[in-house]
Length: 75
Image: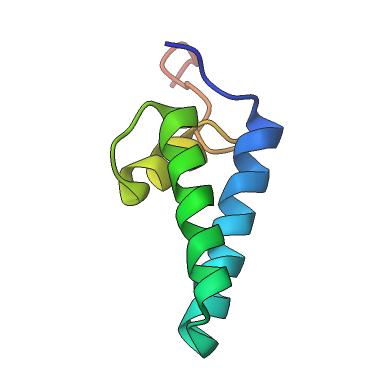
């Protein structure tokens, strides 16, 4: 499966989180529609079917999200 570039994913996550806060504050229809659009784009970009899974998948692919593999380091 193709995955969006980390910079694109980072931007989408940031947009979604900002829109979610705006929607919680005032609940306007344009903000809700934009939030749904960004959620859809996140789902398509990560190959998931719901926004929570998309956020987890996107964050997993961001730089620094995974710890370094220390299995080959001496004890």
